Image (cartoon, rainbow, N blue to C red; front, side, top):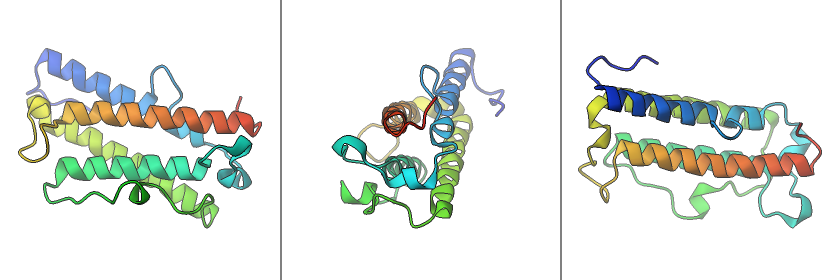
Amino acid sequence: MKISSSVTGHTARLIGQLEEALLRGNAHAAFEDAVAGIPYAHLGETPGGLPYSIWQLAEHIRISQWDILEFCRDPQHKSPPWPEGYWPGKKMPGSATDFKRSVEHMLADRQAFIGLLHEAAEEVYTPFPYGDGQDLVREAILLIDHTSYHVGEILVLRRLLGDWK
């Protein structure tokens, strides 16, 4: 995505770096790499008594990112109840299509968030008039941190299941 010409050097560079971290993960695997090619049967596994399955982690990433995106673009947005609103109730998706849709929604919402960064330009530092002082930079860092944490968990599960390179 091209950064607006109205953005100054430091802000343009920051937006570019945030976008890169959101898309590629930098020091870790990107979300789409972590969830690619997982056998359907593995999506609901919880080896070694771990608390969450790959499905639950991927869906949690999607729900959390959606909540942050909606918070950033809708002052009237109401977040789901914590913690139950952020986690799917079942360890396994209803179908492989449900998992595919979840991944697609996560990727689309991520792109929408990146669009907000670009649209905001110099205003990425401006606190929202609602909330507790959050701005788009803080929310981008939150998304990067949260997603990378759970992507790491997905990779651990895949390794325990013998399904990661």
